[in-house]
Length: 270
Image (cartoon, rainbow, N blue to C red):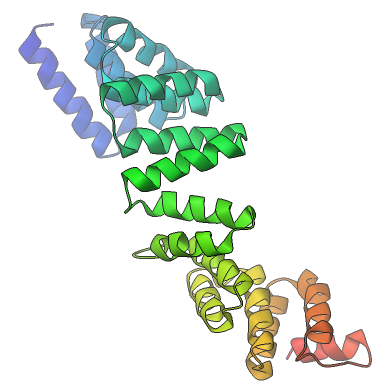
């Protein structure tokens, strides 16, 4: 296949892929490979198409074929790392990300490395990797959210708070608001925690745990009426929250006493 024709085919493949026509892109890749089996760009495209279709093994074969011809392609190394991680071949994934970082340093590679270390379960290295991402890209909400959560779990809520404040800027998921609420609650900022739990519930109204925790912080702030409403919402979403709610209502400084469980259930049922 001549170079102009091959380039035209690759433009068609990219257009189909970007439009979500993955099967059409695959057919075009197969046609191009029949004419130029050793072309690194076509093999790279085929790997990307197969990855999108969930065909990890085939995708890895094609990205390795691409790298065998052009090992100094940073984007191919990055894709090879993602594919290796999808296959849970973590050592190989980290190797490819290391090569990608040498070829084209940047936050994108650091994020992939941090995600991989997260999956390996190496908490110490993962925490440091996410810290590196936040330094390289202070605007990365994902890195701020993940590092903030990890620092909270390590018992450092004061260090986690500014990161999670950063993570909820913009279109943040409910999980980031929930984690921020946990940190504020741990720091005894009941008003701030309640606001964050409410935001998490606005995004995910079925989050029973957030509703329970909202009830707890409202109760601790002395607003029992609002706390009961939050507990009712939690109980309506998940009846198994009853035990936690009962314990919170009877043990907190602003708690109340009930003669029996059925009376309390009746109150929560509205």
